[in-house]
Amino acid sequence: MASSVSFNDLDPSCLKQIFSFLRGDDCARLACTAPLWRDAAGASDLWEGFIQQEYHQEAGKLAEVSDACSSTETCRETYQKLHLLRWRARKMWKKLEGWCTENATQISESLQAGATEAQIQEVERELDVTFPEAFKQIYRVHNGQLLNYDQCLDDDNNGSVVRPDGSIFAGLFGGYSFYNHFVCTRMLPLKRMVKWTKWMRESDRMRERGSGEKRDPDEHHYVLFAASYVFNKAFFLDTRDASVHAWTVDRIHFMRAIPEQRASGVLDGILRWMEVYADRLQDGTYQMTALLDDGEDTTAQQMDPSRGICLFPVTEPGLATAVTRGVQVRTSSLFAPELSMVSTTGNATFTLAYSVEFSLLQQDQEGTDEALDRVKLRSRHWSVLDGSGKEFSTVNGAAVVGKYPDLVSGEGVFRYQSCSRQANKRGYMEGSFIFTDISGCDSPISHSQEPGGNTENDFTVVCPRFHTNVPDVIF
Image (cartoon, rainbow, N blue to C red; front, side, top):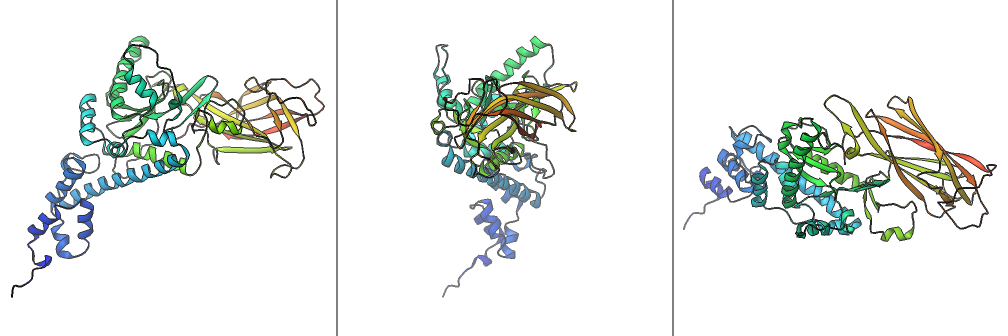
């Protein structure tokens, strides 16, 4: 009778050969089950094979995640770090996909299938860069967005102007507007990444010649991966360390959009940047709303073609709220790098946009103790303060952005956006508004008509203090 042979009877080299047909994560699980299997799974060339097979890399060249694989332990650590990057990228995308499917169908449908290794390598050759592994893991899940506006740009061969359509509001990384300034940042697929990075490099050379100011010689390592439809706002990957940088107003200088973090020994800046963004969508910091806001919040706005992810926070601590005689004022701010100026000399001007929302609460709503039926704004007062709370500027004037919000109890809100500039990264704004009680007035609601000259029913509404800070993470 033939004797049976178990796995434990096999030579370690035979076990290693069997394990080589597995994925690295499965091999790691097997190594936890028995001492013999652990020994067989410890071969250096086994883990080098997993790295080559799953990540298309030579272990010894992955300095970004580990020292060269000079030992079995180092090779396994290298694989573990790569595996963790892949897991984090997929987890981040799962959050974004879930949120977009529920709240932003157009964005969800614009996400393309993941890029192949051949596509990634072709872009590396075209741009003469080597992408960090964190970036590759992101694009292996989704190769950017496919939007109709971009397709029209690609198809335009006659030099005619491509008219914007609703897809310009479907940028994955959100947007905002104030005055005549509008941005909404989409994620570029690899094909357009090549096209627009080359364009950026050439336009930078032209600006350098025109301004006389020298560009950063290391900008050759920068790759454009996200931008608004007219490229007035753009984000770049530094391929050397996976960090993210935002263009400033002169398109010569950049601002880091994610803090440096090297304690983990992994170059993961762009992944951390997208993880923070995904978390903010999930926790409700950012919401879908009309990006080209006319001030009035109505049911029809739910069908507004300019609906997109708005980067003005709608939750605390980014949102401040105050109520005076039933008039609720909600304020929030964001940093606009594309309108800010930084330089190598240390001089800087930072542009902060802010959103103000008015509503007249009903008597039974929390925060109101009297029943006003209708009120109208007359004027505004702003105090602009530095990081220490010292006032350095005041603004007084009639109306807000040329309008006189006319509020009826329990009937929607009036919202407007504006901006301020400051020399420091930290600041505050606070102020007040003069409203007049026009309860009982039966004239049609009008935000353009100035209130009458009778000031007997005027009262002051407090605007809560809110931060105007340059954040550590910039979107």
